[in-house]
Length: 144
Image (cartoon, rainbow, N blue to C red; front, top):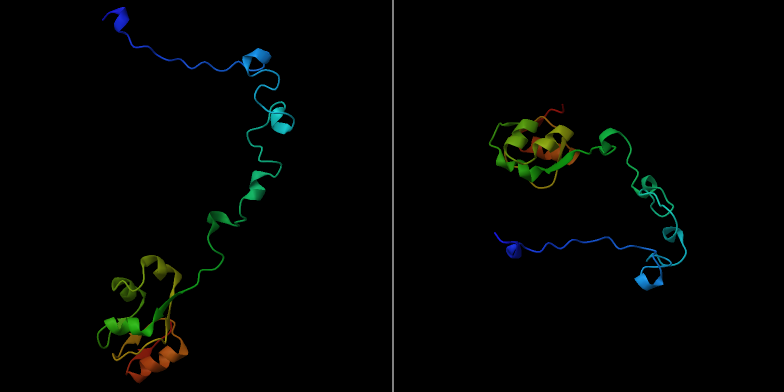
């Protein structure tokens, strides 16, 4: 390889600030005039006077989980998937993919929306209207 075949490498040189008016970066050295940013050293954590922690949302507690987790609401019509004399609990609902495993940890409440024609044994919290409809169809409710 000859010396003439070597590639030229461009080296970027930092601009020399504050070296007179003829340099193009003299006097204020590209900082403009006045103000905090035109002056000496500014800490990297400076956020315009207001501390960073005050700009962030207030979230209390370890892990920042919500204050109260509400139970997942399931309509009565969704239980029509089950056959007669089935015991319905959290595991069965998760198995049929009516709720997710995450929802099963929080809890479930059955609401009285829709109709049901199968006799089920429901072992979950149930609203009053859902209780009447389940018992009318020949099923029974045992709150746990």
